[in-house]
Length: 244
Ligand code: CDP
Image (cartoon, rainbow, N blue to C red):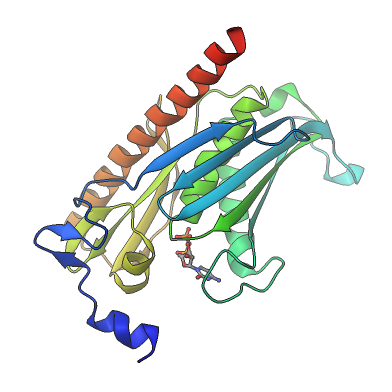
């Protein structure tokens, strides 16, 4: 029997718990680490359930070719890439429609926090490499990129914390894992600025009623605030570690 046929039989919810034993409103386990690479100005590593993501920040540095420069501020260039070995079926190397879309929306989310006007005519390059994927990689990438930017000392008015909620077997749940993403009814990834609670990314794949949408959005926001707490703790620990 193929994996797809197998999973059709798979019950995503049992006795009020999910496949991995989580409650409906529970995030997967998350670990964050700063300064994991020596060449970039800033870097971070994020392990989020079955996702493993690394982010590297270069710049601000002069943008070439010059016609791409913006005299009013830095350009944020975000490159999301999935390693060929990050998924079950080998992913063809190089950009595709999905990675271009994720890169674009993530760059826009980060541009809302970076104080770009301080660095005219420059580019800030943010590279996100997904080493292992298990759904929610755009959220993991953006969360990790925000940490790498802070590690690089790039001035930001806030962090960006990202998390998805979704619907599986009729229930609204937080932070879908791969089986839930593939065989669930809806995925709603968002990104939030924790200080202002402004939403800087919102996508929806699937269908929700208006009430379900409100419930999922509220739940995803709660998830983002939990993520933001972990980001702040990671940054504070790095500052304290540096002082010792
Ligand atoms: O990762 P994210 O949820 O942000 O994006 P998605 O397009 O909804 O993809 C969900 C998951 O499908 C990914 O995290 C991977 O685990 C898997 N996927 C895959 O196996 N092969 C691809 N080419 C793309 C995604």
